[in-house]
Image 1 (cartoon, one colour):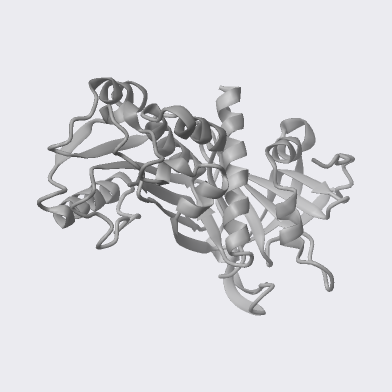
Image 2: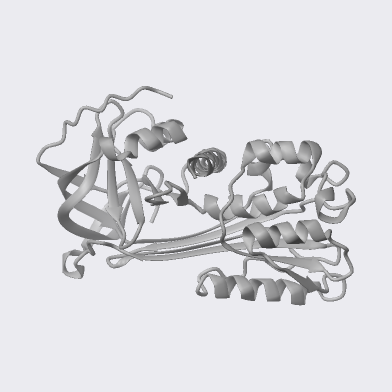
Length: 358
């Protein structure tokens, strides 16, 4: 399980870096778990250099809500269908891509909506599915969690949130004081707060200190975003329960990505090329290739907890850990920060994001 978790976290960090490079100042929200699970289904049918590239970019296995939609005239190998059912509980639904591509698109979108409690709608835009489509792999993940220590609505008030690009914006800022796992790393000016959910999940918020001049502190933090650093910063031995004044904005993000280019930058190139892709493990020849990878993710953070959903479709610096924290710490998220939702036992990152602009 540790190897799986490490692989997922590596993939999460690498993918985040590619998305951040493409958009250095905007909001980001993805589910690396959803994406890597869908890619893993493709990996079952990949051979040769295509498989090698995919294994280097992302290799993660977890049972989520999965489904395959295959053209009813295509002959997919029984071994591939057996493997997707065995490892991912993903059945193949035979559909008529050739005769009714848009009806198939709508059917897929309806399934995704159902799996994400209607949070992810219209995953596949008109024109995404065509008469040339032969296989669509869909993965959906949905999470709704309640804070172990909810915020009192009476303590929420309007405050300023300072963006690095657009100046100050007004937000609904939640507040509470309580005992939470907390860490301050003075060498990089970073506060880390863990807000547990009821159950086995937690949200971690990485808040860099504000600076009047110099480089963007959030981008400087992102350069240090690696699996090794995340593990070191957030492991139990380095975070201690402190009394913390917490100010956290209510926020809602819905982000949509075409992941062909980011995944290609991680080394997955052949799988998208007709004539180069080797997905012969799916149907016995090399005619299949992945035309597109679409990912849409939603998150809402409020006084009660967090609601998040995602769907994916596929056509080291040393840090000192002295604890210079006063008895009462102040964690005021009134400027851009990173956050992720993680399963406590496995350390797998379900969702990862950057909140930089309300």
